[in-house]
Image (cartoon, rainbow, N blue to C red; front, side):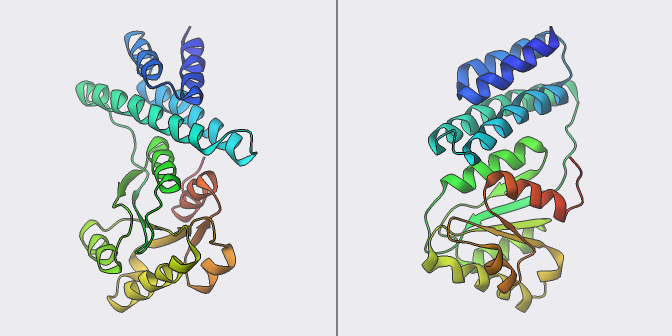
Length: 217
């Protein structure tokens, strides 16, 4: 029965049905299923599946976004139950994400944030068109393990380099791993500007963050 519930939850995430996702999570909770298992084998499994389909060009970006939103609804339901029961999901690390100054694209970053949250990271998305100074202030204040810099336009890519150079100037570059991504961004660019990692897409970004922090799975 538990396997059936988890499979149904996974499928509703893939379908991007917010109401059904919440219903499935509630059924799982009522059935006494382990909340971490519900999270990992239901919600995370579903968003990873739709993400893989997107990479294979078998799903549209809008479908991935719907699934990410649906997963977030399920995630909120699980978190509330965990708080009530006193259970916690192990936090793998703290991540700050933002789209660099001059760029207002948000979809890809939103999906990366949802995936990172789903697999167990504490994610702080500070938005789009973020000035370099705000990135620096956030790093100083929050002391994250990883900073993700998104750029979806060639003309804003230099801002990724600017942020990394600014981190060096204020003496915190060695205290945070930096990963860059976005449609025009390449691994060669990431190496050129001194980033620690590069995410070709949302799935690979999550994998790279895990590698940088030595997280298995």
